[in-house]
Length: 129
Image (cartoon, rainbow, N blue to C red; front, side):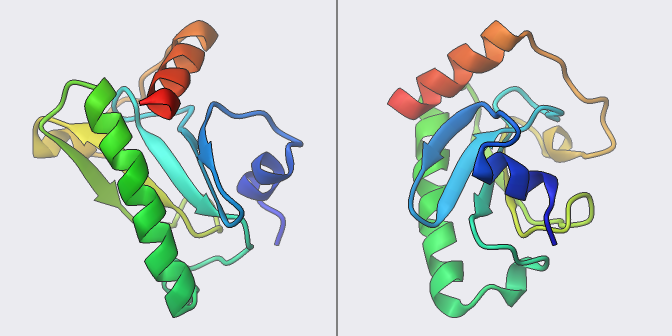
C-alpha cells in the first residue's frame, strides 16, 4: 500500500518537515486550507486511523499535541484544529490546522499557495519553536 505519504517518509518525495521521531513525521500540507496546515503521519502503513493499535493511537496524539503547541507559538490563531478524515490519502494521518473561526477548517475552501521560501521558513519556525 505505498502511498504519497510512504514516499515522503522514505525521502523519495521531499516535504517541508516540521518534526520527526522513530514512529512519526510531521510536515506542512502543500495544499493547505490555512497557513501552517500540517499533517502528522505514522511511519507504518495503515490506511484507517482507528486501525492503529492502542500504543500508536496514544503516541500519535502526544506527538501531534507537541506539534500543535509549537504551531500555536508561531502562527497567530485562536486554536489549532484537529481533523482526521482519511479520504484523500489511504494512509492514517492527522490534520493540524491553525484557526480563528470554524470556517478555517472547511476543506471545501480554496487551497492556499505559498512560495517555497515561505514553506521553508514556516516549517523551520515551527520546528524551532
